[in-house]
Image (cartoon, rainbow, N blue to C red; front, side, top):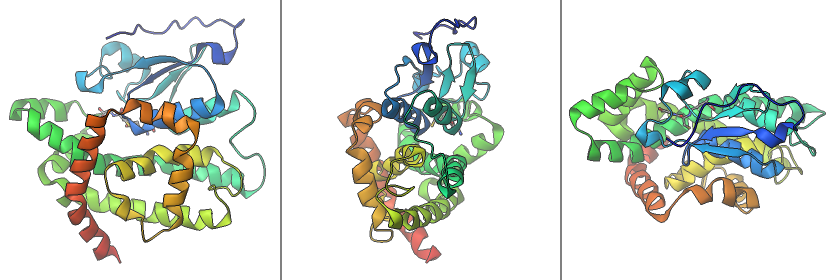
Length: 283
Ligand SMILES: N[C@@H](CCC(=O)N[C@@H](CS)C(=O)NCC(=O)O)C(=O)O
């Protein structure tokens, strides 16, 4: 563990961006989303990279900051502790111009809707990740006793049960059906929005694009691009444009090594036929 609890005293003489501390984790999609916003805004931050495989997000010190034991958490210069990735990126955006949050017209509430929707999108992405790559890692490395202990340490009893089912049934879990249904609606709405321009809010890149990239990129990394390819044509182009931005390299790509990339792609691709079958049932 290479971090200490933050100094909660604050220091009013420094600017808010001087002392942002982000508790995050490499491959966590919600962490990627916040790192992306920080990179887009060019705001410096101090990194507290927690190794979730070692339970560093479940230590008593970290639970004081984030009682659910999830990342990310942002601690500001004044000691404010901000949780929830969508709330964090709105805070980060407001620190410096130009704003990624639209300021007028329907784009304001449409962007907010995307930010709120990230909660269900995250749950869906989480189901797909756990049903595939995490399941392979967990079942390939843990004894029955270790598995029970790991399940018990999930961020809540409902998540424990969800994970138990995902470990037992993999892509056959009803949670995967739910994830496919959620993402189907999300991709349809993204596709509709992208008819008006290269970005979700039209001509200008906004906080909505920034909020969604890590989740859609995870679908691609798992080899599950068939959830949108050939169905919602604009999404692959949006993803390509988003990945071409310098922020993607530093906030997302830099945190994957080749071995991890291969594991994600292999586990997801293996499950793809079962997931594709779920998609057919829906259409
Ligand atoms: N809605 C929260 C979700 C946070 C969350 O669940 N983060 C995951 C990583 S993406 C986590 O820390 N999981 C810890 C665990 O499962 O033990 C947000 O957007 O910040």
